[in-house]
Length: 385
Image (cartoon, rainbow, N blue to C red):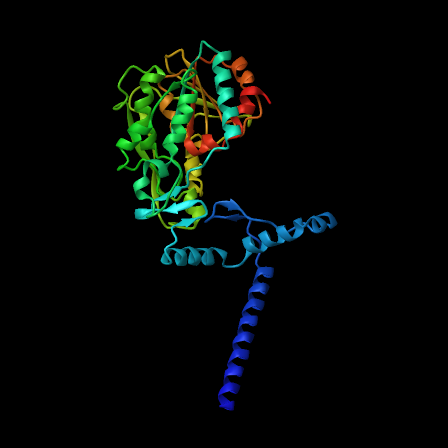
């Protein structure tokens, strides 16, 4: 009996020594291996070494930075993260961060609830804009997020906010100020098609094209646009931000398409106003070589774009938007002489600056539901505060 206890004790000591040796080796490797600036899988910048200072130590910031640094720069982190997500799924967990892992690998970002005071301020600013510029044609599109349209793909027992009700609330609030373009109905009608990416929060170019067909009459486009464009696949290796955020479906590869006019000259001049850059294309092919392939549309998000076309129309449209609009905007080029695009999240000027600079005739607010309900920048641009 004593021999058994002795052998058991020796085994426990040996196991402890092996574990300590493992920790020591990992620590040495962490010290030797250079830090990574970027996580390709998570598509984000990783924490850097904490700043050692008396103020940081007293405030507690040093320990917080140190914890983030150790967590981000741990050797084998990507592998451990994948193992964790796999174990969670085996255990029945179907939500990582704020991303639901739905049927057939469909990832769905949770529906965001607006902060009421901020939402009201944004709505007031939009109403004031239409009052200040009564001669403008102003329309609005709020695109439902995938978790709203593809509710059938949500995991069993998952509950999300009713975004349709939230969108209706905005519509009712702005009913006297803007022309409302309902795209929920057409997206619901085509929900069995690939109108949202599986690994990203955005709609696909196909979803945007269906919405454009629905919006065309309200935008003053009288012709049937359904056969005026042709789609081209520009990537078959897209893996989006929801996969990066959740750690699920990282091996899924999707296609990205663009829609180009079938007739006429689609030449454009695109000015990135604040960056002082000019191009002759609405698409940034270099983005297809990196992780953020959705940035192929317009080169990603920027503060202010001025797109001049060869359209014979005399109309000039201002598009106030979030990232969902990036694959929609190229569809406008045959029908507007100039397209001015402002993203309030990045724009530091005011709407007055834009109206004084450009001869705007039409305005379109184009946001996703989650984008609009969480954007706290709109009122600042429209009120100058």
